[in-house]
Length: 295
View 1 (tube, rainbow, N blue to C red):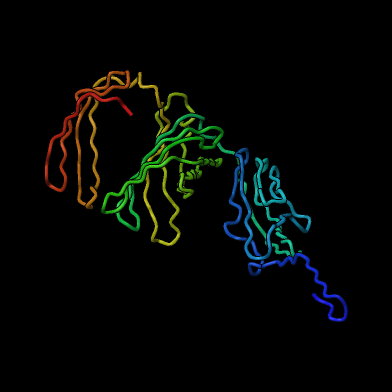
View 2 (view 1 turned 135 degrees about the vertical axis):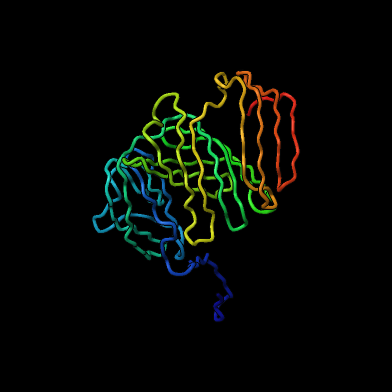
């Protein structure tokens, strides 16, 4: 700015502009259901408006007992009472605009939790690219997956994906029905419905927990079933003697394949005398291996 009637002068000052990202709102997904006694964690996200955002509950409403909402939108804690709770979740932006939405969370009654320890799982089904098969294992503590791995084979090409599990959780209802969620290293998730029989809590049990994938809500996703079992990773002393096995499924070209064989385990984690006969779409072959450690 200059004054033409006096000695030319100029002045400057910082100009701060608030750039809006559109209408303020709460982005999906909304909070998921929880269970009494199981650690709960959810991060709310906003869309539109001008960040930073501030989160709160309004109209004298509150989240389920045992959960607290931080100003950054983190809803965390351990639910202490079963039931369905509705509350008004509000987000406000730096321009003092606000948006609220009614949120409902169902807290299931506490069921018999899966015991802490190691688990292995296998699954087969069909997906958008053909047959799907995957397996893996994980360690669980207080219904939370702490470490594990995931191997997947999918489609006609037999493409394989191997990655670590980032996290996960299990919720078991009073009727033994529940849900297992696994978060992969690439941040994608796989969710199963499961049915845990009472015998799962018996020490040294060999119980099968049936799992069914139910991520598919459109009819075009992955569908199938499998088994979750407690396992003794690193303890092979009870695996000794001669074993026979058989497998049936499809190969990478979607052709039928069957395998039958036998091996001997020495109780120290080593396999000897491995032999198998393979029939791949009518073509037969035999396979033998040298001694190898169990994995």
